[in-house]
Length: 415
Image (cartoon, rainbow, N blue to C red; front, side):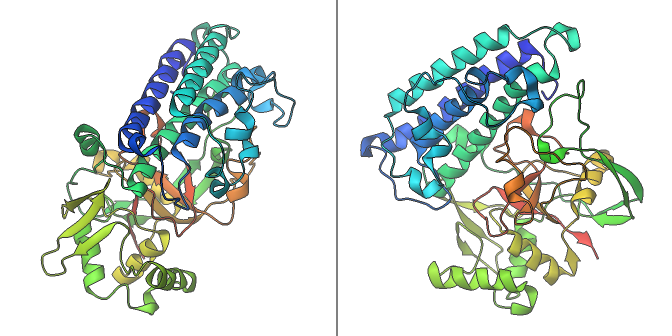
C-alpha cells in the first residue's frame, strides 16, 4: 500500500472510512443511551472528537491543502482553504487544544459527525481521481499521492486508537470483534541466533520510493554484531514467573524512574501488576485480564500485554536478559522470518529511545515525530488491532515509557 496508485488508494480510503464507522457503531451501541457521557481518561479523546478528527485531518491535508501536489515539499503553515464545516478547526483541529481540554468542547452530535466524515471522503475521492497521471502505470506520482497515503495510514492509526480506547473505557464489543481483538496463542520456539551483518536501516526518500513516515527516513548503514533474540514475544506463562518471584517488590530490578512510576501506581490506583489484570494465580499460572469490560482468562502461551516499557525492562533484568535494540528487532524481522521469528500480535517495546535517523528532515505533518524525540521509547511491529496494510517491519511506533494502555508487550535478547 505504500506504493499504491489511485485506484487501489480509492478502495483503501473507502475501506478505512467504513472500518472507522463500523468501530464507532460499537461506541454508539454502548454509549448512545447515556448521551455519550463518560468519565474522562487521561489517555483517551472524547469518542465524538475521535470520529470528527479523522475527517478533519483528511480535509486539512487534501481538500483544503492547495499544495497537496507537492508532497513532502508542501509548506506546513501555508494558508488553507475554508472547511465545509465552519467550526471544524475549533472542534477537531490544532486549536482544539490538548487531550484534556477536548472533553469541554461543544462537539456536534453523532449524526453530524458521520455526515462530515461522508462529505470529506467524497471530496477526497473526487480530488484523487483528478490527480495528475505519472509514476507506476500512470496512476500518480509519489508527490501527488503523498497526502492520500498519509491520510489513509493516519485513519488506520486512529482506528486502532478507537479499539484501544474501547479497552480503556471498558466498552463491550460484539463477539466477532472481541474475538478479532484478542491475540492468539503462540507456538513457542527457542531463541534465534542472528549472525553479524551490515544492515541498511530505514526507508529511502525520493520520487519512485513510495510512502514513508518521516521518522523512517533516511536509509543508513549500521553494523550489527551477532545476537540472540526470542522467536516470539514474552508469554503470560513467562511473565507470571516474574510476578511470582516478587518482581513488583524488588527495587533492584527497576530503573529509578520506573520504580517511581510503580510506586505512584500503588499509591494512586492500588495496583502492583499489569494493567487490566484482576488476578494472577502464581501456583496455577492463571491470568484474568479485563478485555473490553469483560474478565477473560488469558492462555499461558498468549503474549503478555498492556505492559509499560518499565515493566518490560524490569522483566529482562530479572531474567538476565535485555530488550533488543531497534536495529536488532528490524534485522530479525527481515532475516529470520522463515526461521520462526513471529511478530504482529502485540506492539513490542525495544530498548532504543526514539531519536531521528541520520539525515532526518520533518515531513509536512511536523507534529508527528519531532516533538517526541528523546522522551519516547520505540515500539516495533504491530498488534492484532493494526490494519494489515499498516504492518511493515520498518515502521517505527513510539510512546512514553509509562504507557501501558497500548496493545504492547516485548521480547528479549541475550546479554
